[in-house]
Image (cartoon, rainbow, N blue to C red; front, side, top):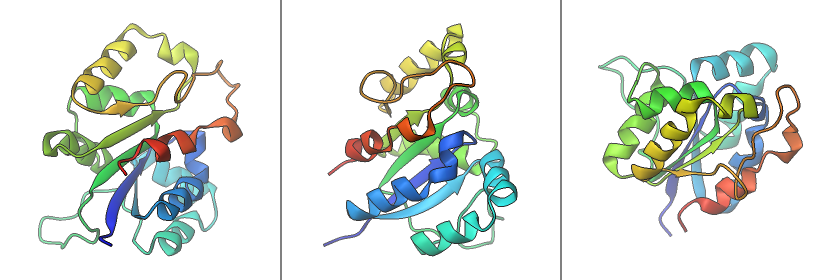
Length: 180
């Protein structure tokens, strides 16, 4: 059996503190998982959660990446066969939909569209953020570009500000949406 590589790209939202959940679920589904964080998510996990970066490195067998490498440095991760962006914040959504690639995470997901990779996005933001007029357009744009955005009944349902339920984040919906 050929090993398939999944890039799990996480933004700074509360579910990022539980990345072991989707990593283990994807591994059980046959994926070799590599974790890439936005700079803010890296800061959350390295400063607020003792040993989390090291634990993810041990769990995946790959270094956790969060910044671009230098041009002459070798790639330390295998190429992806699919990408899961979860949790996807409103900030990253807006930048991604407008092709801004100022972080490694954004560069990979922006490029992933052009490469035709299967990309699943599982948002995490509150209903006040979701109500901003630009959000629906960004989601529609990414869906039109081929990204599976799990927002609504079959994915993430935005919550009232400061009333998110970390245990209710639908990791399994994202894992279930990955290519077989």
